[in-house]
Image (tube, rainbow, N blue to C red; front, side, top):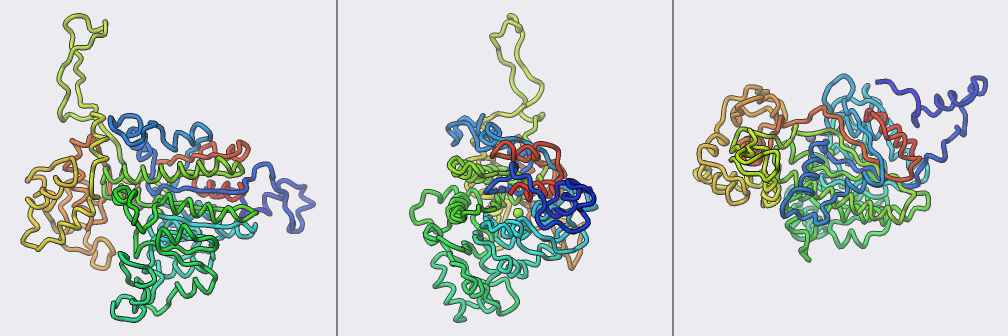
Length: 540
Ligand code: MG
Ligand code: ZN
């Protein structure tokens, strides 16, 4: 795809189109700006893996769950739709059909087509300026918030430039070089020197004392760099828990977990605890807004609901619902804030859809005939649909799930090997979820086969024996997690849910925009994410 107009990275070209040819003989120092179409503040929310289907789960829950927790039956997406505009965006990277989070976020951040799994560079591998660079040039404050880790692909693409998303230790250094004013997420281990791994070293003891109880302290680095020291020298206030965060006022680096932050079920379970130390995605976002909005020039903030994707990769529908509720809470808080800050553009989108998810009708448990009073039925005719179109009570049962599938298998794997039996798995699944499995199903979930895609040096395909996937196993390449996908398949009929894949799909994603009408117009069409990036760059 080639985009030659409306490019903030091609200001000169645009200026030449607007001016006469003669006046384009030298680079204009002050190219004309469409002032009416600018916002002071831009808040971009990315639901990772949040395709139309994932939003659909939240909407079904809000409208149809018999005992839903959203008592108004309306979501933050209703507010976005009622007050804002909607567009649709293709997400594909350069020369491929399906995108990953790194390339997708890079395309939004830079306005350029990107290559798979690359961070902040174009399709040819050249470093590109990002929306954060643009905001900084304008004197605006900048921020990144994610419930994964700050070095993970989505936040990284806005402030780092690396040839692969897995280079997270380099990404941590890039993030500090870019010097965004507020960075809040997990990922502490990428900032700590290798010696931190050993709990007897002074550095381990020092960090342990600094971050407080309940925090795993380790290192993901292979060098002796202490990036917390670097950050302090750059003027960052370092915060590691909720109360420190809520007192933060200036430039802030908040690292609230060794790696990933809490998943949606865990966050929800502990949300009302007085002693909770880890902030929620909503709390991080609110504090980021408090800090960034002090800048008279305005700000750019990216907020990621990053674990929607993780739930969807594992086909864990109950967890997915909780992740969507977490995102909904966060977006509601952003909209509340924007009520008193009208000169703000809010854009909500996804980097891609994950899982090919949907409720689906089936041949299982087809409905019994029943009388309907309607006059079209007459005296004897019975209402009997041919198929099971799904009972909305499923939505309440999904909400009641008490542990993620990942956590259930963590419990299982922590058992002595002799106790890792189908009976034990059945017991765990049936204790923590509403959708019960049988012993045969538990046996199938634990069955293994020779890895049909074995590659000894590969990051996820390196095991010789892997869970036995009955169909389409190529589309479940995170093989260590595949017992979770098999569990999802075992309860699919009861959940009324289908999942097509353990990876991403090419489904176009929605682009919700909210703000002054003149700013929204460009977003209300069929876009590609590189074009969305260009439009965002022009909006402030
Ligand atoms: Mg992400
Ligand atoms: Zn993903």
